Image (tube, rainbow, N blue to C red; front, side, top):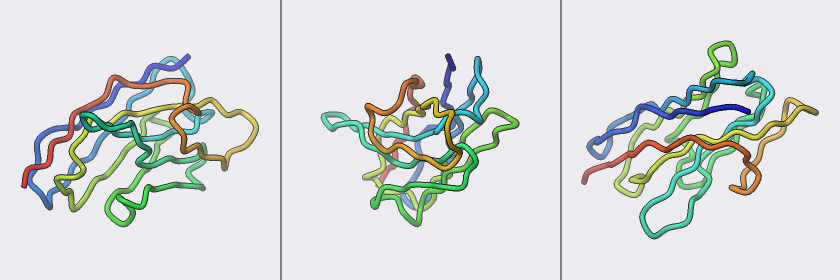
Length: 128
């Protein structure tokens, strides 16, 4: 059982940057595949990025590739999403998610149903 708390969201002008953080407690982050999802009003929750246990494998949605960077610091039990060149289309609630995976260090998951634990979300609003 792991608890996830996102932070770092806010209002930013188009072209600006934000760094989201996901602090995990109650578990050892190194055994979890981690992901970031986002959901805009009236839209389905969609994968943004994911990272394997040892950071060796990452996944990015096409819409954010080249602009967002996912990273993790297992020693700090924290996952980050660096968001650069933000666009109004990036406006959404961003969620951190975790999936326990004890059998390899290189797997990633990209489907919402794959993840077991979720944070409360943090709002990111990008103005035009």
